[in-house]
Image (cartoon, rainbow, N blue to C red):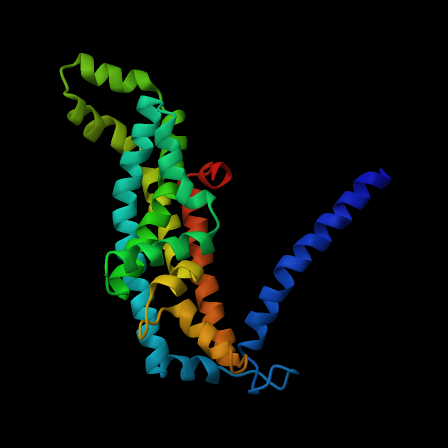
Amino acid sequence: MKRSWALYAAAVAGYLFLYVPLVIVVVYSFNDSRLNAEWVGFTFDWYRRLFANDEMIQAAVNSLAIAAVASLVSTVLGTMAGFAMHRYRSRLLPVLVLTPIAIPEILMGVSLLLFFVLLNFTLGIVSVTLAHIAFCIGFVAIVVRSRLAGMDESLTEAARDCGATPAQAFRLVTLPLIMPAVIAGALMAFTLSIDDFVITFFTAGAGTQTLPLQIYSMIKISVTPEVNAVSTLLMLLTLVLIVLASKLAPGALRTS
């Protein structure tokens, strides 16, 4: 019994350590003071200033555009990779697909930077999008493969017995069955892309701003409630997408 209470207390302390700072960020985004040293009063003024900040709005538009394209392309490629890993059981294919998510982000950011420099590729929105696609494919593949592993293969075999071609069996039987995992993978890819800082930092180039980079440039001066406000909105968007992904594919997040 004493051990159970000790584990329970340790778990509570761990969750408090993780989530209390996030709650403080949200609360102080409504603080009527430029300094975060103490609570002065409640206000929405920082959110009004945030939506009037042209640089922040442009950074948000860039992040949303990059995340949309990266999630779309990585979902298509990741779905094909997950299907290939499930069907062919190759030892090399999982290594090729999953290595980008296993290695440290800073290592991947540096390697992508060197790759773009080697190709004499101009760093900007396109380079960031390509980097995010390479990073997100593995996550989508994991989600799709986990869904395929729990699918009844006899349904596909029945479609083939009825005269369907492999392409028709995939389009009419397999794809509808794995669609929740595909959507969950797309939402996960979107979340990872819009939140990413390290890989973006190395591949963005001069003059290209995304939301994480803009927040970083702001906190180098001081952490104002405006930073708290944009962090709160980004946190809310990420939370909504993660909840949707977990509802569509309950086992996906545990598998990854």
